[in-house]
Amino acid sequence: MAKATATQSGAIRKKNEKVILKAATNEFVKHGYQGTSLQAIADRAELPKANILYYFKSKQGLYRALLEDILAMWNDAFEHTTADDDPAVAISAYIRSKMRYSRSHPKSSRIFAMEIIQGAPNLKDNLQFPVIEWSKQKCSLIQTWIDQGKIQPIEPIYLLFLIWGATQFYADFDTEVRMIHGKALSVEEFSQAEQNLVDIILRGIGLTS
Image (tube, rainbow, N blue to C red; front, side):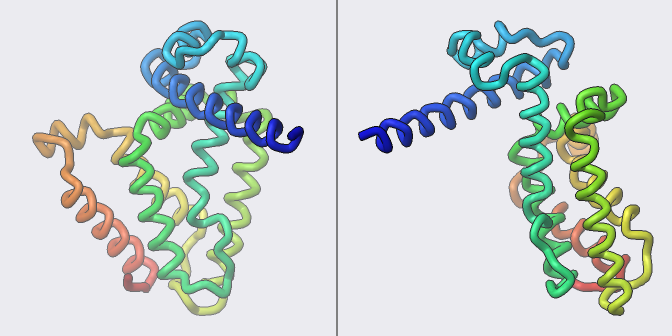
């Protein structure tokens, strides 16, 4: 009985956290960190403000949890890649994953972009070290592929910068895309943009998709 109650409680917590994070995303992307209040998030989530404080302790705690969630989603496709993996397959999967995240979660990407533009005040403490360490690990992985002759010699960090900038562009600068293209990209057009990006980046390091 106690185990069932604990399981049910965990499910409720997970559901509420998801609702709160979605509401927070909509408020933060519209008003920024400073312009967003916990009460506004609570109203949008249709939950008591006390629930947010129970799960996330503070507005900053909620905002950092949101940033952590964004980073985890971005990194997922490349997280467990090893030097034994085919670099063409691994890098293609990473690019495609980040492109699709830009399409499915554009608001999250814009929140992260705003955080960086403002000097990353909420990344500098708890999140800065994990971000740097993850980047170092992936640079080391890419360098191993270079040393093994699997990809052309390049500076690994610039490859990561290129992937991040090119994929996140479709979320952060969606307005520019719509303005120049005349409308939002269709599913087919977005897939074409994704494939073009994969082809361009892979060819640049001596690979094919």
